[in-house]
Image 1 (cartoon, rainbow, N blue to C red):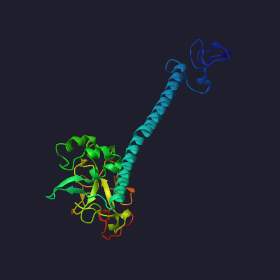
Image 2: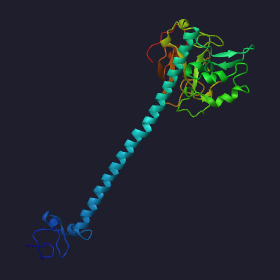
Image 3: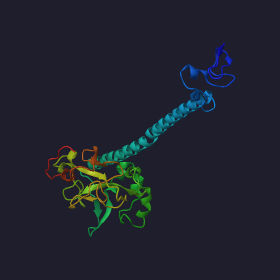
Length: 282
């Protein structure tokens, strides 16, 4: 038996608390004062508070970890998947353009015009058979413009390959615009052969993302390389919802991600097929 240091009553040798006054004898043994031993009514209450604090901290840490894991496994992969799908779309468009070239010996023109020179039909329509969209191609009528009474009914059937999953432009629009112009990959109303790419296929952009504004997928509208100023990473030029830049399809079929901070001179050199510029690293 031993004596309680607080009330002097006899207590058992085992146990931390005095059955008479309720004080935590262990606190006395460790050198704490009587106030410490009896605070919060009893030492037992203090132990419970400490335990609850530790439990709360542990729960908070686990919750934070789960939230972090949720963000990494749910949010980030979705963004990466969308970017990969966009890249794959351009890859498929590149394969279709090369297949068209294999058959005709030239790329499709940026557009087919009427007798007055007005653009009527887009290159995106011309390559439909090479995108496994032959039925849609057969329904398209070349005896009326792209927005004629019949063709307008086909707008809602935009092929998936023409739609970037990150774009908010709507299901009938596409951000994939060709580079057109006298010295560009796509001629204005005429066709260009790969042998005309004096700068090299790997140094010439065929198609790129221009999400703001995107255009109806059948509309014969593209980026005019002859324009004096083509914004980079901004509306009206090549841009995308992807962070940091945009995808482009090169003449050799490769898909590159171009930084929105690329040198304007370097980028303009990539828009021509026979400009004679020396393109460095980008």
